[in-house]
Image 1 (cartoon, helix red, strand yellow):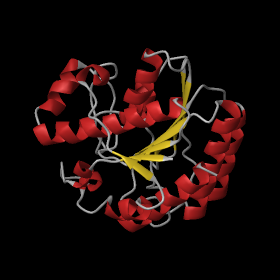
Image 2: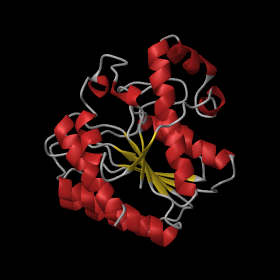
Image 3: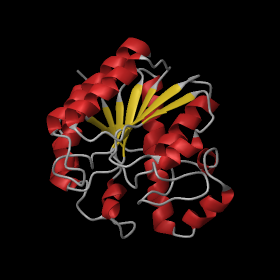
Length: 250
């Protein structure tokens, strides 16, 4: 399992909960000794424009620090995706998140849609013909859904179910009917019991990781990567990420 992280993700690039100082520090400490870390390259403008409009690019580019950090986050997703198609598991420990960014707009602490940029890249390069995007964030990934609406190559999964047992049961059942070349995970942890959602425990995130890891190994040659979305209690976020990744690599 490779973790894509850049020290600049620790810097405050905006004034919102995703960008607050200290948000990623406990997760970095929790993962540092058990995983291989690699610094991502920034995404290129051409890669961003496969997903976003020129107008949206210009709106983000007007803030130099924000652009720098957002390109690194998209780059972390791209590097994680490349790792997955080459047979390795990967997680982008990055910010800002991305799943509320549509082609021409963004909200919810998101700027570029990291997961969409990565999946579009793989499809464009012909490295996969289909992808399943699983978004287990508390909030619906409306940007991702809109970007891939009508795209037969990409299936987008998100459940609004709250109760832990019901939620994981739905995920397990829905995975049984899916087929894809690769799994891309929008890994948002704000559904956690000690976060905004107050629903899922560390054990639930371990189970989600296990379900997704098993699916990837059985259905698509183990090709799976995940990208951080929400999660705003730093200590809870660290524990939940660690549990999810442990389940994923079982």
